[in-house]
Structure formats: structure tokens, C-alpha cells
Length: 425
Image (cartoon, rainbow, N blue to C red; front, side):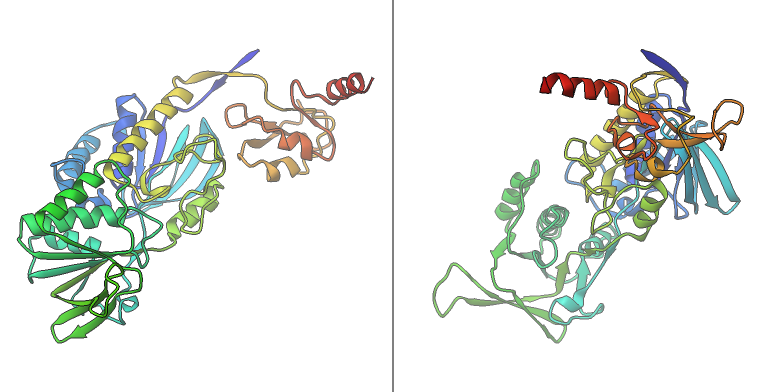
């Protein structure tokens, strides 16, 4: 048995960085109207500040400008700058998203929401020998900006990895890319100190080989390297773990020390997690709710995450996320009216006392409270309703209902008890 349900095909995208822009472009190719909400006063985010990419010769700023023109010229794309999502009601297919911006608050009706916010990072040179912000220290992002603006002074560049970056591979990609660029384009002396060079991503092993062939020096350390400020230079003392002799200690004097920025919990992600009722991990990335769903999905139908919202991502990964999420939304919301299988939990209005137990315990946010004194035969004129698009048929609501008002089709009490009696007999 199937039912037809009216849905909204529009999509709200939170975040105007490269992830949000690529997702918006992918959705427009499939015919969905898009509302793009950006916290800052311009689109592009940190991606526009990068000097180059591993995946393509096209400059990040060029990609951003091309996408920006495409989206701003499209009458079916509405861009909200200096704006934030402050609340959300409803379920998949019929969300109502409240946006606050310079023109006040505005409510947008949409069928799906895509969260595409960026990373939040901080540079902590004090962890590297007690250095300060002005002690010839650059973060990987700071180096990207310097290379983009061709402000590459000094001869010797030393990268240190492994102190705070073991959980993520993005710092290794950025280091290999920029170390090779410094060596080949600017003819600098480049040294990379790392505990474990991660090259398990597509194309990274080749990039690592190119960097070594170009003259980038790689050193593997086990004990922490010592960092000492010597006048205008920074001295890095290194003990080679492979030379079991007294002369296994070396020093490298650096004009610039390059360290990765640390990823810190993202306050925007935390707020959005509460608004949309999705779980986050310790870094405020989208938490793994279920091993059977992909990282772009959440515990709630109709709410998706792309790019850096679920993990630090490469440009290639962002393109894949955008295409996957756009395709999923098109599959769920192909028309203004969709057909669903009517096998979702049903509520007997006469037994429902609107205690909200099911509403609170539903892990998928699929339950609404409907009010109609003429239709519902109970004291409150209200009843819980499981939205068939948002419901994942887990049965938790039926198990938790204290009034036995909820039944799962195919799992009614009498049917299950009858099967148990037959099994016993």
C-alpha cells in the first residue's frame, strides 16, 4: 500500500564556502531552487585564500569566482549574506527554517537542509618550544596566503608535523603540496619533520615521490624535536632514530617554521547540531550515528552534511559530497508530490494522551503533534503522527509508548503473541 504526500522541493544550504557553493550548483543542475545562507559578507570562505590545489591546475580563487557568478546570476538561487539559521521546525519534505540577517528574521519553507560550514582552526606556536606569534612562525593556511601573494621571503623553510595532526590527513596534503611548490617554483631549502607521513589518499604517494625527487628533505622522528629561537632564525634539533650512534643529533636553522593549525570545536556546528537535533563528535563534526549510513547523512531524513562538516576534506571529496547529496535529495524529492510505502507506525487517537514520550525518544525527529478536535477522538483533540518520509521504521516509538497507542504494521502485539504461542506449542 502506498500514500501520496505533498513535499517542498526547495533546499536550504547553510554555509557559502566551496562546499555550499558546489552543492548549490549541483542542486540547480537537477532543478531544485536553493537558498544559500552565509554568515560572512561574501561567498567563498577559506577556500578562496588557498594558493593552489592538488587535484587541478585551476586556481581556487578562479573556481570561487566562476561559481559565484553562476549562482548570483541564477534567479532560482537566493543568497543570504551576514545571515544565520536560528531555528528549524518540521520534518523532511516540509521544513520551516528561520533565518536571521540584516533585514531581520525570515522564514523559508524547504524540503531538505544541507549543512556546509567550514573548519574552525587556531594557531598555537607556544606548543613548539614556547614560540610566539611573531617568532617567524606560520601556519599552513598562513603559508598558503603568503604563497598566493608571492610574499615568500627567507631561504630555509621547516615543516613540523605529527604533534597535533595525527587524526587528520589534510595537513599532510597541504605540506606535500606547498613543500614541492616552495622547492620547484621558489628554489627554497625545504625540510619536513614528521612522525608518520600519511600518503594513503589518491595521488599522495606520487606527490611524496615528486617532493623527494625535487630535493625536499624528509626526517622521521620518534622523540619530540627541540625548537630553539636563535636571533632571527629558529633552530630545530633532531635526533635520528635510525642511527644508533653518538653522532645521531642534527640541527637545522630555519628562516620560517611552518606548523599546522589545530582544529578546535566549532561553535557554529554546536549551535546547528542543537537546532537540527543531530549528534556531533568531540571536534563538533557530524557524529557517526550508524555504521550503515554514509558520512553525508545524519540521523534525520532530509538533513545532510557536506565537506568539512563531517571531516576535513579535499576539493575532490567536496565535489563527491555535493554530487552525492544533490542526487539523494533529487531521489527523495523528485516532484511536488511523492509516493511512500504506508508501513510506518500508526497511532490510535483514542489511546494517545499526548504525553510526548514518542516525540522525545525518536532518534530521527520524525514525529509531529497534530491538533484537530473534530478528527481525533480523545480529550486533547491531538495525536502524535509519524511522518512517513522522515520515519525510518525503527519501532522505538511503539516500544516506548506507555499507553500502547502505537503499532508497527506487521508487528502488532496480537500477531507477535500468536507467533510465540505457535512456537511454544
